[in-house]
Length: 235
Image (cartoon, rainbow, N blue to C red; front, side, top):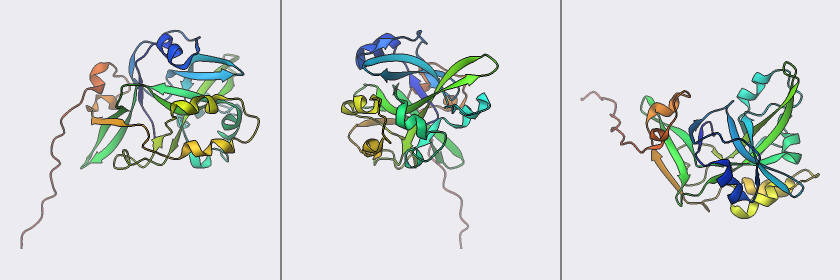
């Protein structure tokens, strides 16, 4: 699962990293991007690659309501070709989602503790995404939305959660973005979780639980209190 992330870099810097045109307005550094928020993605048509901003939570073109997207912020790799919501996007509308980090939660005792996951070398994590266009009947305008593909966790994340976003290595960016009129079967290998990218993982404060909170304090490491063992009766 991937339900929150950070995007701290400006569109201009992302454009340089991905050799793309910066077509989106700057959104500012953000440390708590949540479903239904606008976020930067990398899209490509033929040889033209661009940084743009789409709404997180894919709304299929056949949906009748905007709120459908609030439930579709992740797409499971195992069912992406069968799901009516995602199969067309997987074939023809793939994108990259560059993030500086994402958050996952682990249950510690009676609480769910958030952790920040980033690349150990400080470079952006590049997540596999899908996008779609949906015509809003109220606005008579097309709303473009995206989702993040998830898979089983690698060894670094297996103790934290049973899902993780698909992280694409540099040499897979072009393959993922390339126009493909086929069924995309050749991309399935990218869904296999590996430890090719070294991750830095640390606990953070619970302020990230509140979507209204933002700012660099959210990614600062915190010390965890020892989890008390349940009391047992002596004999």
